[in-house]
Structures are given as structure tokens and as C-alpha cells.
Image 1 (tube, helix red, strand yellow):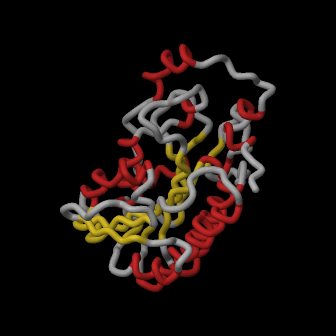
Image 2: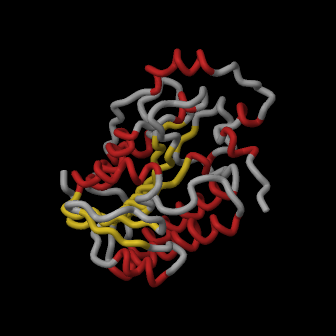
Length: 266
């Protein structure tokens, strides 16, 4: 359903932004696409705005006139603190300040499973579990969740924080049998966040209907997300091409996988 007149998608030049570009047109009259990288010309039903999230004036102009925001923009991998700080921390602040000034009342924030990456793969957690970031990237996303909570409590801006698992065409390894999120389920989840009557401030784990999972979405049933895909159909192929994990390796012990051992940088 077309839930909004003009919908803003940040990070439109990224891997997931490219997947959502054509899918999100079903949810709005006009899809405003933004990134600091070249996106290409606007197509029918689109607007294109180049923007550096660290530049408050550019972000303010980007947000003007939209009714809702799907915020994927920023650094999406573990890296040195400085670029993460500029894009993910300062950028998120600039976005919410612009949303406040322009009266935007709903944001879908692309958080990450790396907010809770230092829980063990033998554990099942829900949204009430305390954050345990596995690096600078996860730390920045934990900040974004807290920031969005503050802007809801003080200014009434509703946010659905999606802790995206591993969104690829298919699972690449055994870890992703638990974390995989298909592109179509990602769109279903975002659409549910945009259309559910009341979001408040919600945290939901972004995963498909995988038999193996570390995450329980019982606290986000009000969002109405029903995944249709599953990593289970890839299980045999994944096992055939990967070796058994070394259970003494932190990468195999913790939910964050390789992120728990990345860096230091600089």
C-alpha cells in the first residue's frame, strides 16, 4: 500500500539501497533517493538528492517535504572510528534534527545485529537484552537506537529500529543460516514498519523465517512483520561448501561473527 506521499531513502547507492529502490516505490507516490555517491538520474516517481550526512545543511534540505524516512545511509562495515563517527553518529543526529524541524513523524532506522554481537551463538535474545556491541560499527548503531529513543520520548518521532541480520541473495556461510534476511523479506519488514498504525519506539530483528535463530521478535508483534522466505532451503549447499566451525574461535562463539575480531584500525 502507498502509505506516504514522499518517502526518503538514504543510502540509496549502497547494496541494500539498490535492492529497495524499485521495491519501495510501491509504498509511496514519490521516492526521494539520497546518498553522497552518484545514484544516477531520477526515474519515474523518483527524486534524487546528493547529500553528505555529516553536513547538517545538506541533510536539512534532503529531509524537507518528506513524510517518512527509511535511513540506510552511513558506513555499513567495521572500520576506524572517524568515518563511522561522521556518517553514523553525527549523520544520525543531523537526520533526527532535520526530522524534528520538518515535522517528520516516522523513521525506519537501519540498525544492525552487531549491536548485540557479543552475545553467544548458544543464546537466544529479544529486544529487552542489553546492547553488547562487537565493534565501532555496532557501537554507532547502539547510539542511533538511543538517539531515536530520545527523539521519540521528547518529540514524538516514532522509530522502528531494524537490527538487520545478513541480507544477501543467499546465505554465504553457516552463521548466516541464523542471520539471513532475504531482500523481499527486508522490503516486507520495512513496509510493515511504515504501515503499522503505531510504532512508538520499537526494536525488531531483521531476519527471515529461519529454523535456526538467536533472536526472538515477540516484543515487536505489533509491527505485523511476517517473513515469507527461509535460509533452510540453502542449508545443504552451505554445509557442503563450508567446514565445521572451530568452537574455540571467537568468530564461531559470538553472534557478531567476524566483526568481533575485526581491527583495530588506524
